[in-house]
Length: 97
Image (cartoon, helix red, strand yellow):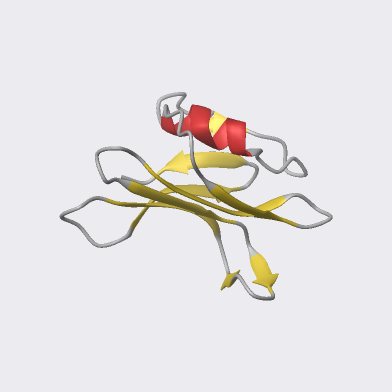
């Protein structure tokens, strides 16, 4: 059974929307960049007023964007390098901070 503090359940076929990612992170940015294809969102990045940056990447290869073997959310603060903080595995988000 999943620990609700570390995971948010999601169906294996269901891809997150930008609003679900914002809810997962507890943020409400006013400016963001997103890229989608026929399957759904594959890239989302935004910076908060405090300088913290977030980047969502979906598994796959996307021309002109990125290639990733995992679906994850990365965080970068003004004093740190990018670090994966959430990983999507087996149909659920896992907090890996």
